[in-house]
Amino acid sequence: MSAIRDVFMQGDGILQLTPTWVPRPFNRPGRRLRLHPDDYFAMGMDRGAIVERWFSSITHVETEGAGPYEGMSFVNVDDDPEHAILFKDFIDELGAELIGQELMDAYGTWPMYSKFYDYQKPLFHHIHHAEEACEKVGVLPKHEHYFFPKQYNNHLGDMPVSYFGFDPSVSKEEVIERLKDYTTRDTRITELSRAFRIELDTGWYTPAGVVHAPGSLCTYEPQWNSDVMAIWENVVNGEVFHYDDLSGYLPEEDKNNIEKIFEVADWELNTLPDYRKRFFRRPQKESGDENYQQDWIVYGNDYVGGKELTVNPGKTVTIKDPCAYGALVIQGHGTFGNFVCESPTLIRYGDLTADEFFVSKAKAAAGVKITNTSKYEPLVILKHFGPDGQILKAD
Figure: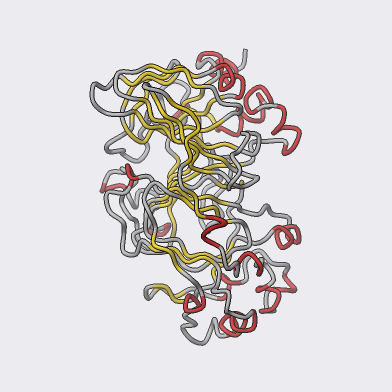
């Protein structure tokens, strides 16, 4: 029996994952990832601070200087970090046995991941290219969904406000004129946008093709397998971005054509008059009783889904789901299948945790037994999964 199959069988269809940290060379860390204060620059001062943690990921980080497996998850096989095995290797060897035949037939692999995004300041107005633009350069579009858990937001950063698209009164020509000045002046492109104050324990769906500037909360983000991006805002809180940031992921012949850069956006989505009604998401109860409650928190799209499970103190439940999923414990402690689980208080870079898991499709369908061993505190678990999860439709 291979080492991968042996670990899979020992876990009864559940894998325990190790923390995957991601630095970025821009903005400042929000310091809500529960990472040790001394370790935010543990990946090197030249790489920037650690501002993200990725979950259930087979996606490589698309930033300069990233290592060969940066952004990709690893499986804890024997509690020795040096022996961890790449999560993608489990996908490649086990295939449908791990993620289900539907995903294998449609995508040939696990098609999504999730992350914690954790910045002190709001991010630049940027875009993940629409599907047609991605096809031209052979990359995947990045559809993403936000949820703002109270457990990871002891503070709200410098500006808990997100910009989405442009005001419906704005014309294409106005936006193009701002982009033409990208290298000559502060274009203040968010003057043309619209913003919403962020509410804890709510979320937004952001389709590929929508220009957006996320606010300064720690955000749980289930998303499609991609790290494609272009930055449309050239000066953000005094930080200057350059033309290469604007023209990324375009055919070489289009990089100096502002109209072609503009075309990576879906203009109709960017200027919807009812944008909030279409894409704002409050939790929706899925099931529950005196022992637990499970809510939909990521829904209303064709790509990614997510749920929040709360098990009450001292209770044991067996929860069934229709698909393979990643799981993250954000509050409390107990057991998750054969594993001890707990939400960490403080993590040293390179250390293991007992808060992240991946559940195979068969195990999810059979049901995962979960016990909250606390006398007082709820056990709260976030789940993220792909399009085979019977994702709730939006009203």
